[in-house]
Image (tube, rainbow, N blue to C red):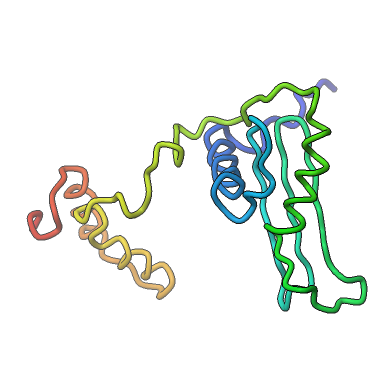
Amino acid sequence: RRGEGFGNAINNYDLGQMNEMLMAVVSGGTARRAQFDDFEIAGKTGTSQDYRDAWFIGYTTHLVGGVWVGNDDNSPTNKVTGGSIPAAVWRDVMEPAHADLVPQPLPGDSGGFPRDGIEMSDMGQEQSDGFFDDLGNLFSGGSPPKEERKKRRRAASEGLTERESK
């Protein structure tokens, strides 16, 4: 048999979105202590209940690494969070490991989001009308009638508020 390999596990856009989200953790979120040089770094911090465990898992285009901090008797730490000691230890190990490596962008094409500054707060009122109602319906088991959803989408695409579309 001749195979083509496993193929892609994720499409390029979703990969870009995931990398953008995880880079934001390092560039402006809980793992700012993990930053170094000009490398694109992505990762995730974590802290368990009562500060028993704290971790940072991070990656660049070259290397992946994780740091866990905790007590081996399962007792709480002194309020250690994933963005504190674990992120700093990760940087202290990974920075010298990257000394002879060339910075490269993380893979994926997210179309610029969220780097272009789009935030939920930037969404105009006409676009957000009904958004949270629809979101709530996902959890309550209800949903607006099909025609109502079509009307809202049409109004939003035309730049009309919900009142103007009625």
